[in-house]
Length: 78
Image 1 (tube, rainbow, N blue to C red):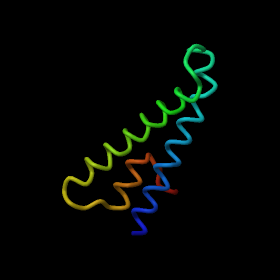
Image 2: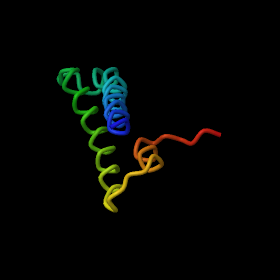
Image 3: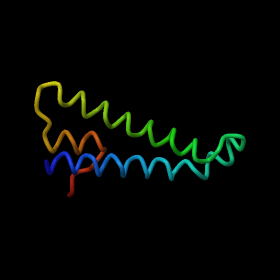
């Protein structure tokens, strides 16, 4: 259960960080596109990438912490 909560929280963080990162650029590149739509598209695209990586890693029936970290692009602490 702890792992599921960790993954869910990290997915929300991926969505928000991707959505917020696109807001400024979308206003310049596509001013006719509403900012919230750009943010939602960017967030969903980022989440879809992570979910696809998690699904691929879990094909063997197990999902390790290392695989979860790799799917989210986490770098090991030195």
